[in-house]
Image (cartoon, rainbow over the protein chains, first blue to last red):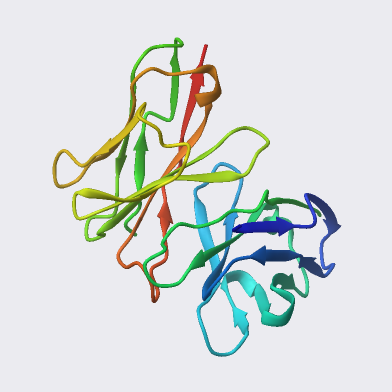
Length: 114
Length: 115
């Protein structure tokens, strides 16, 4: 079965702290991986994505994620968070090729205290 | 910057009533999607649409649901007879490609409340 597990549902950090949000997925076949972010009152928007090649991908606003195939993981990281990173973060794999739907995790609510 | 829009932002309806949720995808996109998120639960895929037909649908997307692209710009989701459990945030998304860099762009959502 296709599924995603995000380990941290609520994270509270102080500014400048490092962030790592866990994501593990279960998916048969080739997978594309996405992290989406939803800032308060805004649309879901793409943070970063992995399709192939270098397993360490960089996204917007200093975020990066590492695809570890053997662990079925795609953890999101940021070395130093800012108050403006307060948002909901979603890990979402998608099958490559004709399988187009995104499979969603529960999301992680990140609150960064100034 | 082009964006996906959705109307209305909030919809309150009585159980058993029909609702139509509207979406205007990004103009040159070819693939369209509806997802929903019940409060406190995961975002769930409902349906994908390409070339004027459904490409894939989930178990949730039963006979009470339908989608349509009535003109060159709108993409609608109709729920014929709403149930209490249809209360959720409904998100529309579009992409210009299926694979490759086919990022899905999301609208702001319509919050549907069924009483």
